[in-house]
Image (cartoon, rainbow, N blue to C red):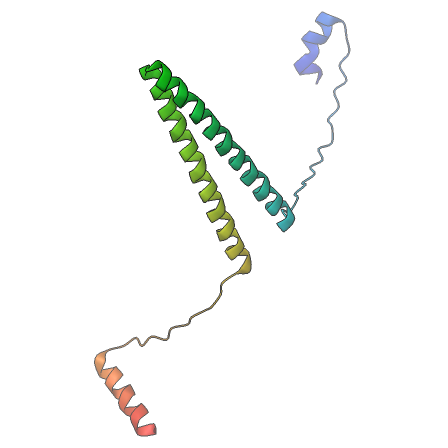
Amino acid sequence: MTDTFGNLDKTFNVESAIEKAEETVVDIKKAKTDKDVDNDYEYTRGQLYNLIEKGQEAINGILDVAQNSDHPRAYEVAGNLIKNVADISDKLVDLQKKMKDLDEEQKGPKTITNNAMFVGSTSELQKMLKQMGNDK
C-alpha cells in the first residue's frame, strides 16, 4: 500500500494503515403473507376511493367556476380533472381484477385435462379401430 499512497503519506506527514474489512452479506427476504397482501389491497382500495371522492368534489367546484366565468381554460381544467377521476376509477377496477387473479393463482389449477391423441396415418388408424372392434 505504500506504493500507491506513499506520495500522499509524505505530503500530509501521516502513516496510512489500510486494513481490508471483512465482507458480510446478509440476505433478508420477508415473504409476503396473505395478511400483508390483504392489508395492501385494503389500503390501496381505500386510497383510490378517497381520491375518487376528492376528485368528484374538485370537479363540482371547477364546473361552478367554469360556468360562472365562461373561460375556456376553466373548461379545459374541468375536462382534465374528469379524465383523471375516470383513470383512477379504471385503476380501482384493475386492482380488483389483479386481486382476483392473485386469489386464483394461489388456489392453483382447478381441473387438469389430459387429451389422448392418435399420431399416425389413416391406414394405421383403421387397423387400430378394426382391432378394437374385434376385441369386443
